Length: 628
Image (cartoon, rainbow, N blue to C red; front, side):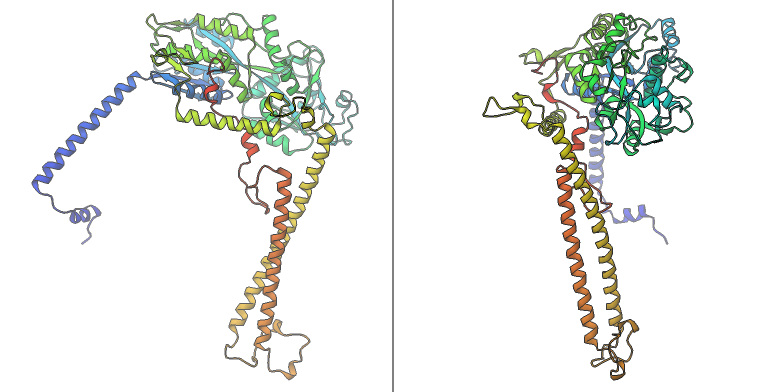
């Protein structure tokens, strides 16, 4: 009969004696007891772990994760901190907990975050539930328009665009680059006649779309109020026919980069990092500038300062922020499209136990010089001093339990004190954090070597009067180098095509040789002087077949040898072309030796691409001063 696997296994096992069974039973009981003890110990340890959970906007999520990991590595006692990147709207929903099955206005999370304040309706709902929400601005982000006007036509300072012209472009009223509205703003700009504008916009709801459409509405209200209506403001709107939708910031960047004569919008950090062409946006004062120039001049922070000066942004973190907008603020260098990211905090932390002090320490670190400096690593901009003061007022408004123990920060060694409880110490680190810090320092070192910054303190020269300007090419030299790179890239493309042709020829010759070998094998192996039957294509047209009974086998062998020599020569030609291709490609990039030379070949991630990615962890440099 059929024996089941289980029965077969029983038959294979040796029989146990009564003593062995008793021993196994005792061993099992001991293992169970040990497991119970370990579970109890783990449970006791978990009770001592302080847990803090937040959720909200995806934009600064990597920034939050960096800080939370730093806290987990440096805190004593043990803390566990999480942040779910689920979007601003969900962050507000989970902070409010209005429809929570556990009870009305019972929050799902310990804190929230969003790129927008609570609207008036939600704010009033929280007030009605006696929830005192603190909205803490901690980060600024610029948004901008980017284009792909070819270099031969691109103005030196970028294509200038006003809000009125952009409103016409994105509403489908201006459809070509040579439209008088564009040409009048750009002296000397001469695009091809009738060159169409390819317009890209985001889809599926986007906070960037909300910011861009708010700007178009706010900035056109005075000069051209009929160009963009309030009904066309939102994270998802009905776009004009002829415009093209793309999904996500990555999709927008890829679409603009791949499409000449296109235009779209994206957050400034993303667009600059991806090397997109910056549109020179004209602000309220009439200054037309690229977003990178505005950031360097402090134009983004100026927008927040103007908002405070004009009382657009409240000075009380408990106030209603629903009317706050940093769009189209005045100022000669002010950038006109600026978004604010907020932390959402419940002022009453008296019933949260040890969570309240940890949340306080988290907000304190975000507002600190170290926390604000960290924003730059993730393409964000810290808030100006006056706005940061608003955040510190929020800390003053947080009410903790009467027996709450506040956390302190050890930035330089405090003997004994640094080992006490409720200390976040820069001297206490995890191997994971250390390794990330080393990697981060290495990446920054390579970036400095690659880009250079002209700072004499960063170079070791014997001559103190060394002119560092000589190390950086002029615009003319740069243009020459760029032209050379373009020539090399064209040579590389030609070589790739040549390699592909040689590959095809080599493959054809190899197949032909294999076929000839098969036909020879089919000939009579006993034929020594000639064969009666030979495939027609093996005959020599100049050979007199009347005087010969058939082809000589040695003639066939000679043909095969000639074909083999042809295959070898073809392979050598292919290798020479491949070597030339690789040499040219290394001249072009000089930074990616793993890049494939053959058409369609994959390549490893280049060092330059790794450098462009945000790095996590910054080692011992993070803290409240340079010693941290």
